Image 1 (cartoon, helix red, strand yellow):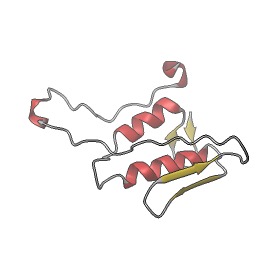
Image 2 (cartoon, helix red, strand yellow):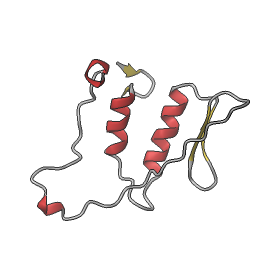
Image 3 (tube, helix red, strand yellow):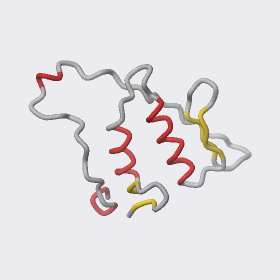
Image 4 (cartoon, helix red, strand yellow):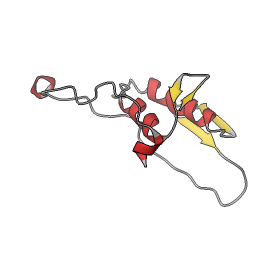
Length: 101
């Protein structure tokens, strides 16, 4: 299944495959942040935006109680690239939802 507007596979596993493959080393997190905000919008969040500090922010609903989920998006650079027998993050075919279950 794909999102016709963006041509992207939908579902949690394809989304995670996509963001894992984006460079998110320190100072280079923008592509992952943009993809997270895009996914929040696709899922129908009431608000989804990048704040002044460069964080992905999303809101569903209003009122109380409030649940805050905080997470790091950056990753460390790959070390010893010549030591890998194959690329650890190759482009992958998106999994189907039945494969993800």
